[in-house]
Structure formats: C-alpha cells, structure tokens
Image (cartoon, rainbow, N blue to C red; front, side, top):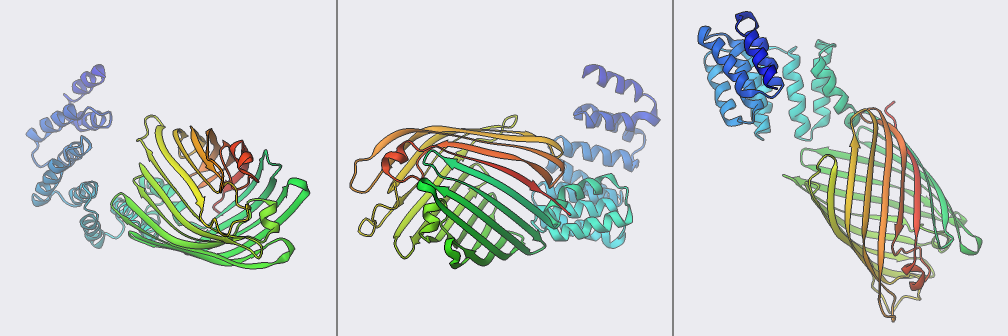
Length: 449
C-alpha cells in the first residue's frame, strides 16, 4: 500500500499525470493522499474543474457526505457546470434526500436529454424510491443515447430482474417418517402487474391413501413507492374433482426500515393425502413485520374445515438476526401453532399445539453471476401437546440448503432441500409428532424470456 502511494506521488510530480494519480489513489482507498494531490493541482490551477470535482468526489467516497455536499454547492456557484450538479445529486441521494436528488437529476436532463450519467443516476434514485418501472424508462433512454455506456448497462443488468417478464418452474418432492410422500409441479409467471401460477400435487399416505390437487390462479402485483398490493384468485380442484374457490390478497406498507404486511387467503389444506381426501379448506387472516431483515415476525388466525372436520388455529413466529459477517449471520427465535376448539375436535388435528424455540446459523455465498449457495441450520427444543394429554418437550433440529447457478441477475437454476425433526400437522398422533421427521427436495429455475 505504501509503495503504491509513493509511486503515485512520484508520478504526480508531472502536472499532466497528477489527476490520474489522484484518481488511482482515491479508487484504492487512499483518500487523504488523493485529496492532497488534487489540492496541489488546484493550487496552480484554481479553475481546473475536473480536479475540483474529483476532489469533491473523493471527499464523498471517504464518507464525509456533508462536507462533499457543501463542496459541490460551492463549485456550482462558481460555474463548475453539470458535472458538479450530478455530483451534488448523487451525494444528496446518499444522504437520504431522494426527492431532492430526483429533482436535481431531472433539471440536468431538461438541459441535456441525452446525458447518460444523469439518466442512470435518476434511475438509481427511482429504484431506491421503489419505482422500478420509471427507473426502467430512464435507463432505456440512457442506453438509447449511449448503447455502450458501462454504468447504464450495469444498472440495467441489476434492474432487469425486477421489471422484466419472468417464468419460474419448480418441481418438488417431499416425504416423512409417517409414510407420507408426494410430488408437486408449479409454474409461476409475472409480466408487469399481472401474475399467473398453476400447481399440480400428487400425494401418497399411510395405508395407500392417494390424493391429488390442482390450482390455477391469476393475479396482480402493484407497487408504488412505499405501498404494495398483491392479490390473486382462481380455482382449486381436490380429490374427486371437487372445486373450491381459492385466492389471496395482501397489502404492504414500508416506513423506513419497517415493512408491515396484512392480508388473507383461502386455500386447499393439502399437506397430506389424508387431508386431501377429507376435502379440507383453510381460510386465514395473517400479518407480518420485517425490520430491515434483522427482526421478522408472522401472525395468523385460520379456520380449517370440511364436511367431516372443523377447527380453528392460531400461529406465529418471531426471529431476530444479526448482520452478516462474510456472509454469516446468527439468529434466534420461536414459532408454533395451536388448535383452539377443544369442543369441536375429534382428534383429527394432531398435535393440538406445538411451540419451538431455537438458535440458528445462516451462511450465504455467491455473487450476481456464477455459483451461489445458502445454508441454514437450526437447533432447539419443542413443546408438543394434544388435547387432554400432558405436554412433552423434545429436541428439534433442521437444515435448509440451496445451490444455484446464476447465468445473469434474475436468471438462475438450482436445487433446494430441507430436513427437519419437529412437530407437524402431518403427524397422526401426539406420539408420532414427538418423533416426526420430514424432508423436501426441489429443482428450481427462474427464466427471463
């Protein structure tokens, strides 16, 4: 590092090379040395706007955003031109004043509609404002004016998965130690505001009980700024070709780092062949909260019913996660559920309640292209109870993993899997729930046509 600084200073003794050396120092993180070089140039050429703007940019890179903002404003007042205005717009956005940055970029574009740097900067601000389709329009203008602009092309590669039509096929296999197994195929797609999904599931249970379900649904996914609405509806076909109206609707609001979601759904309760053959349908009201990914919670109230069975259930989860360090995060939390209507139950829904507390470890590796993977491990204890029976406490553990290959941002394929030792509504008795083991494996892909 010291040799690089000394070499740059030596090169910088030639006036023509001073600014290039200062840029190299700034890009390698030697901000003080870069600023000193820029100062030496400006001492000789006070109106060298390239050097002055490079100095302001280096101050911003060093994290002194307030100083960088005042420096850019002084340069604009001195006549430094649109490059200083773009620098100010960038710093203002970094300081969280997105509306002001938006206005600054638009003022620059009003004078030069082909300024790719300003259009790309505006697109980034619009994306931060959760206006991805407007960001797409800005980037298309930038690339139309300058097809080879590297920054615009890179920004479009990152934005493309958010605004382009996509198709996601998935094939899943599941099984457990209660003789339940099954396969499911799903194809989901989204184009603009519109969504589509179709799923076919085939299951086999104990005593050679078979069950099949199929659901087809259309929906909308609308988001502007901090508000989002997602809704869909369709029809589900159960064993014996009985038809059930299915659907879901959720409203999301983001305020700062906090995203709150509320909504409801009506679905086939088709976890196992026995549930499918019973014609169970679940209607649920639910809510979720996410605080910057560090604290997440879900809550729900459901009714589960058919001609032969009926009950009500509450469920929820709460997890806290640390920030990632080299892709590694540590968490802890709890989740569980409980059936409520002791007077209605006939023992079908077992266990009646369970709650699990665990510590967890999550590792994420990979970049925007190439191989990527996640691994999540959890271990703790679970409390399991059936109606009119004493509760028991058992150990619990789980592992979830995924390996994907990303051909480009938003275009990938891979395999996911999971294994858990924990209570499940698939179990047929409290004793079975206490020793329940289940697994799942899925082949997944995401394609942008």
